Length: 310
Ligand code: GDP
Ligand code: ZN
View 1 (cartoon, protein in one colour):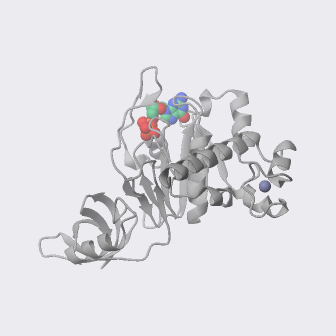
View 2: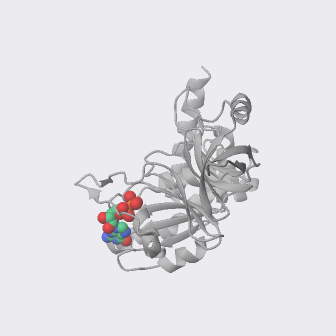
View 3: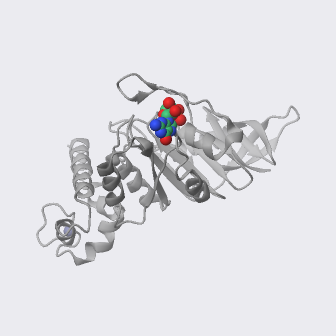
């Protein structure tokens, strides 16, 4: 039987199969095979993986095979021994969620998620929630930031119900991963879109604006047969340390489109003269803040690779 992994707990998984959830364990042979083949990843199976299982008499199951992945959404933090964490597999869409306040907006975090989405060819939706708390200049900043990219930006508020249906329409009939800091309103927006879920909403703790963790793990929520949400714990970090500095600009949507007009090929749009990207930043066609964010990521990757191979 075929199913989809909805939760992973070490070597045990919950698999959604024929409208029921089945507790499964991985066939030992399969485990060894995958472990031997991949030293890159911290986990060998992820939520969203499509699997073939055998059902046992006691109602549990055994995972026989993991079917080839269309893509996977992952992160890699700094550190010589850090491996790639596969957060989710086979995604149609990633929703990077932030809030205008509590916690504070940080589009550089979204830029790193965007790099991963381009690398894996997964469409990105940026949802900036709590617009009831936004100042006019924050609004302008957010709408300006991704203006020359293909990123869909949704500005929302659970408190005023603003754009909740717009987001729901985008997620319809897709498997979407929702990522963001804890406290931005992920749970609240899921409840607003799908009241039948009745998820528990956390409080933003004290004056730090950092939310408490109410979700500790990644899990798939089956809304209906074709609409699925992969909810992730409030991620504080989102590293892309597996991306080499010289390829970074390829994963910055608008930079890659305009790069053919740079004199240097390839151009990292940093120190090179006669650079089209720098020209477009000066003309205001590419948002300056986004260019600064690009350079910031570029330098951090260069530093990292220099220490890794020195
Ligand atoms: P999560 O950690 O991302 O799942 O965030 P929660 O959904 O638990 O929400 C954290 C806090 O933000 C709660 O106190 C919510 O009531 C509040 N919140 C969620 N959405 C909004 C919104 O649109 N506006 C405002 N002002 N507060 C919100
Ligand atoms: Zn350039």
